[in-house]
Amino acid sequence: HAGPVVEQALRLLDVGEVVPADQPVERLVVASSMSIYGEGLYRSASGALRDGQERSFEQLKAGRWELEDEDGSPLTPVPTPETKAPALASIYALSKYAQERACLIVGRAYSIPTVALRFFNVYGPRQALSNPYTGVLAIFASRLLNGNRPIIFEDGRQRRDFVHVRDVARACRLALERPDAAGRVFNVGSGRSLSILDIAEKLSEVLGRPHLTAEITGRYRSGDIRHCFADLSAARRGLGFEPEIGLEEGLEETTEWLRRQTATDRFEEATRELACRGLAV
Image 1 (cartoon, rainbow, N blue to C red):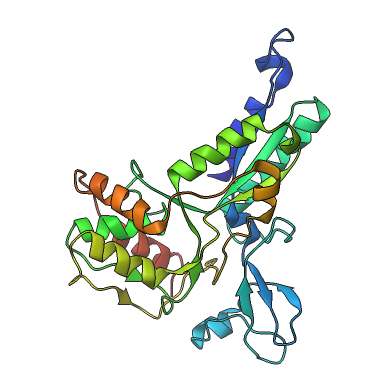
Image 2: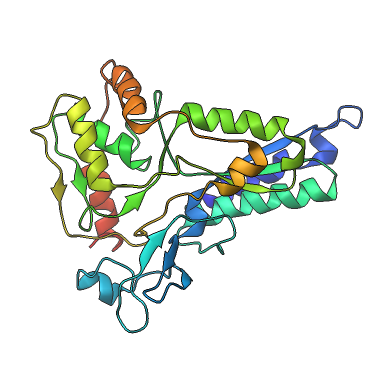
């Protein structure tokens, strides 16, 4: 879907056609994504910071899930700042990076104050529960609401940053209001990392279905990353952003909404499609 997504961004940025000269755009905020980082930032045993590199198929087939340095020693994940070089591991990541760069380039050329926000794993009420390609928390919720166990690839210890949608909305407002944010890129996350297995267990508990324990498959998907969670230092300084909704509070609020929803569990269908295309092993 990268083509249509990028085309929509370019249509929005067709300043001469869309924006009348007497109604200049005061601020443009583009919703980017943590997916453009690929793997997050890591630290070696010697203390050196390292950009995480994509794991080889040989490593994954052997079940060595953690990133390693050249001598096979494991690397330790650390919070990922905006200065980490992009590593586009999927078409989605490619499309989001194209959107981000197009907006910043046009913003600079036409003097439109533009801010790019790299959202991490957003969750909360009104998520698309029946879309098997949405966030992992929504996928787990769809499984649980249908009486099915959450399915986890690799070993479940991969770590992510889950940020509540109300914190994301507040970050967007700050990006619109802060004059010195123009022309910059900011992470928007919780600043806290949790394993995928932790999330599955917490969600099962708050939905009252602790018997539906996660099934860890030991399989893997092409393009999946191991660890990535946000360094919020720049967002704190440049936006005055501080996440306010803790995971426990956010899950309780989300659960109240989930109990009123009907979700179609399409996870197994999507996994079969990935397997047929050689993208899930």
